[in-house]
Length: 199
Image 1 (cartoon, rainbow, N blue to C red):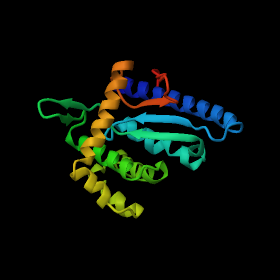
Image 2: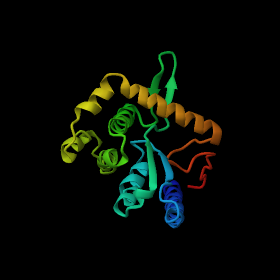
Image 3: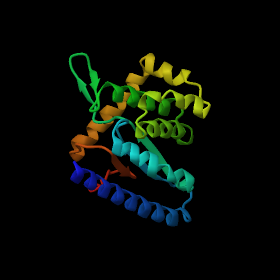
């Protein structure tokens, strides 16, 4: 278990180094072409402690430093979810609570498509998860002054299922193409996706 933690920590450091390098390169190139942004896609599980750590302790820095201005950040909270027959039930690696929170975060992203609007909610929920308080996720609406109705409606009326199916399907395609078996996974400028497998 300790060896896995050290390996994941090492992978996280490499990911941050690569993110910093790409960001620096992007900053240099942004001076010549201010309309282009670096696309960063993060596939993560809401209840994965390593994913929560990445979001809570590192990813937020792209907002604090202004790097978000040159970044097209896409968060995909799919987890290692599977769609099971016969009724297409989604089964999540960390259980039903993860399926709930994956869908809630996907609904928040769908409700507030601007990353500057949905990231604070995702960050708040992931912070609670990181602190071991995942059952308190609904307090994020009040903390951020957000109306919970659109996200709750999305979750309850079937839109949430559509949004999460789309995320699971997209992740499945990537998993088949790149033989992914774990998250978090980060893609940069994914036109002909080049997976950073050592992250």
